[in-house]
Length: 635
Image (tube, rainbow, N blue to C red; front, side, top):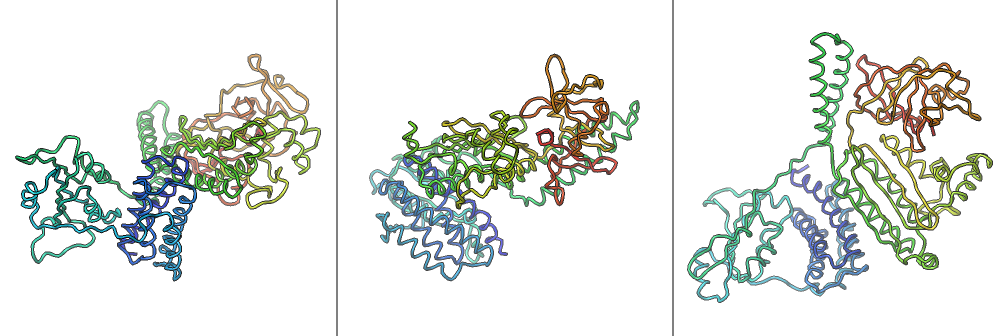
């Protein structure tokens, strides 16, 4: 593939996504000039990039969308839901065209007709539709001489502008000539190729142009006009005697920032090598003589390996904003299809997480958003009858807490009724009625994560098929995270996902049980102790221990792993007090072995559906260690 086209197919979808996000936010805040400028810039840049290729249908419709956004910027058109919908049609179609271009190398045969229909739909909003905005510009060959001539003839000449576009301007989608021609108060424009001599070859992919401009506008107005390329311009206020030095607040403010694009597969390969280094480091630990010099060397290797692995993992961090933007757009469209008026509040676009998480969390989050809009949020008439504001509110909030990312989806809808949930679970055969009635409110809310659970009375295009919430928990658990729910009748519901910020080394406690070794994340272990068999007390159908006047349910790990309940209490004398969402639990094991740093790998293949596992890791002796999900085991 041509290198220029390949770069365009990377940046094009990013611009489509940016424009879509700006339009969603603009519908909520129609007077936000920053959003209007951002959407205009995204469309303008995309249009400039399209101009480098034979994509006329796409270029024509983007040009008309740019005109319309320019009308909005200058108050000639108002931001309405209908206008945003038409612009969304353009952005969505551009996304489809980009996908087609990547797949086939061109646009489909119907692209011209689609472009014509989109332009026709935009024309009803635009005052400038079909009008020519071109201007006659007097171009002189000698910028300095023209400047001196114009100073005496043109009253009010205020500034000179020298615009040197970045050599990669074409790749960024900029149109330097159009930007120069749009200079406010333009009097004269001189265009030349810097450093060119007769007979030189001209590289059409590198921008070597220099624009010298004379304008009647003020330095502030020119600074605003060139704000998107402020590092590429010098704005010189003029006096009657000489050219003054540029104002320290205007013109070049620093060197251009550079971004290095790296193939994600290279980062993955580097991370795999770092993972193998961790395994080798753990093997070295088992060989070290506790009293020898090798221990000191191993400690240094351990520290350096941990630091190296952490830095490599940070290379994989990417913003979570693409996921949030997609959710924002999906929520907007879904609310409209359900006839519900919803204000969206999306926060945390700046949060960065591991790329693997970004790729995986969209589907579970989309399930939660769909359920909130379909089941949680009422229609406007029901909200008014309940004394609520007519417009509902849905909040999606991502934030970093320690070494985890927390994503919260909160609605102010009808909430969930624990009694109704228990009744629905009984109807679905998910438990006996007597057992379900004894559940606490929180345990009743947890029923929604049971496979096949649903309270929907009818199947719709959105939900009601009895799948979704169990898939959410399974997906989050597979990523080493957890999901919780809180709800109050008439107030709303909140779902909280907590996931590891990045795939870093996890500190685990290695335990032995039933002749096998397993890993328990050290973060959930409150303490370890040894108990006598007589201290494990029978309580109804279960067992418990008393520790410092507090009662903890006791569960032998072998019971959970084998599914049997005939394990003799005295078979385990080592106990781990672990933290779960419902409180502390005493977990009995045969023996506590080592503590070590491991790289957690997700379970794949046939074992991916096995409950109670967070992942696996390779030990120094080549054996596989299963890392257990304590929350799932004790549930």
